[in-house]
Length: 558
Image 1 (tube, one colour):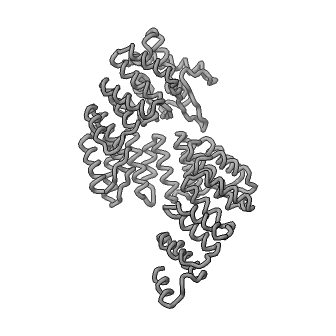
Image 2 (cartoon, helix red, strand yellow):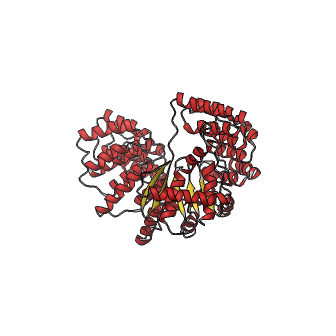
Image 3 (cartoon, one colour):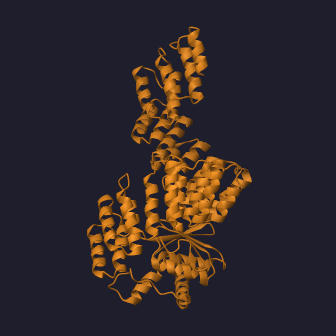
């Protein structure tokens, strides 16, 4: 490319010649050459035409730094060059990367005035722009207004919902897509698998896996990595491993997905062994890989090894630790009971600790009974993120563990005066391709009577096995029997009773829960897994719990 440029200069063909400059820029952009080089050529062209302006806009839009696009568009107007149908798709692609919805809306209105909005490829990029900027309702309205919807449009709206925490809508749009006879591709499946992973809908994810096998999409690396991630996030590590071992080509993304998956599911030793294999393969781990590695060390209680990996990340791979890595180190020390050391580590961090860091310390203080440090951590959290209901609960539990009931009541009164309400807990299970959601004391299900009879039966079976309700953190001003009843009706227990009623003996039970599992439910589920000979996988707000034969993969620290 540069040789052609040099040849033209030597033979007296000036870059100011619009045709020469146009072709040189087009070739430069097509070959993904650095944009400053293309811009240098562009600056020497006399009166560039719309094709040349569009090529520059496209080059920046497809680069890692799309920021100059808006300035180019402005200069285009200053030079009285009218945009054409090819200007807007690349312009909107850049805005989508920048997630600048305000400029996107301005460009949308200009495209509308110029009569370009009706063109399918312009509408598709508008749809993509709104979805990337998190304005999924605007994206959906655009989608609904389209008389012709190609696969790109369907993929954009499905991906928009999936990326913006609206997995149910993503799956609904896919169902409509199937009814209209539109065949999905690899991009569709990545979005769908992400939605299934978000919801924890393993059965639907398996159906998508079967579809991938049927249409021959298992060779698509993006879709296969998303499938691996789905199984890991649904707590099905066996299937995640199987996908990994059958992949034709494993990138560092594939290795990282499994390392992180093993770590968050409580299989720390396996995650570390896999990391060693990754290094033997000559692959370069990413900062996300090291989050999984440090998390694994935390779950295995491997303090020295965790610090060694932290040094390796910095010294051997030149990765600057992010706050997520420091969070793992605080968790590592806290799990090991080194709470004072964790506090000192926070004070020596090269960045300001966020609320998550202090919340990790507060959790460790609650587990290990460090009241003074717990109060210090809570004071920092109040400054950084005052309205988080979970922090009040953690502090209340810390006081309850010390039997300081007046302070428990004070925390609860403060919570009320601050206008903070405890986030209602719910548990989700999947049965025969349907999703069921249960809340505490839920009696809305048609099988409620049978469910509560089953709950009573479960409690009666657990007590001879050593189950004693963990009532310490329940309000102190109610009778013991009421405390036990309150604990019996937690959402995960109702969900388990429902699944025992409706599934065959020995069938694994998988639960997605929006809050941390309480101490009483954790103890009860361990015993249920033994008494009923069931594997029970609970994905709570922070991690996975694999209950089997009376024990949990978290080793009773969560």
